Length: 137
Image (cartoon, rainbow, N blue to C red; front, top):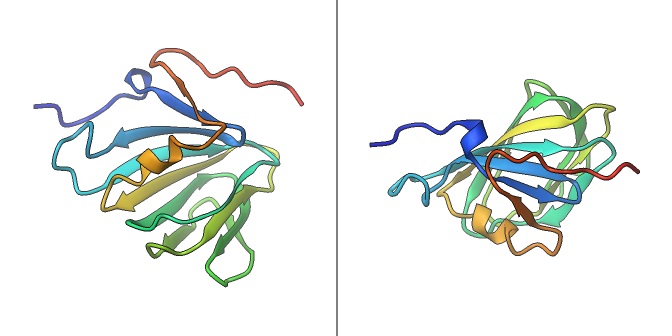
């Protein structure tokens, strides 16, 4: 029985704003009640306001700084060590205001909301072992 994943064995899901590697999903660990992965948001980038209608989300800022919105909170600053709770169905967004990549641990409960991200028009899956190619601005 597999009980862990290695970064180099996971595909990288890329978007105009950054990338994600999902370490645990209900697909990779059948019966897992959650999804967990590392989100990287590139400097001066962020993702549009969106919702996850079927999952609560927890974000833990590993590195970097930015601004976050949750519902009608308005923008608030976040940085390494901060934790954000987003109830299911609540509009939210994250934007990197720093000069370095913003690294975030994202957890959905129940798992499965990651599948909706794959419908984004800028979604590209990069096979395991290959590095994403970013264009210089």
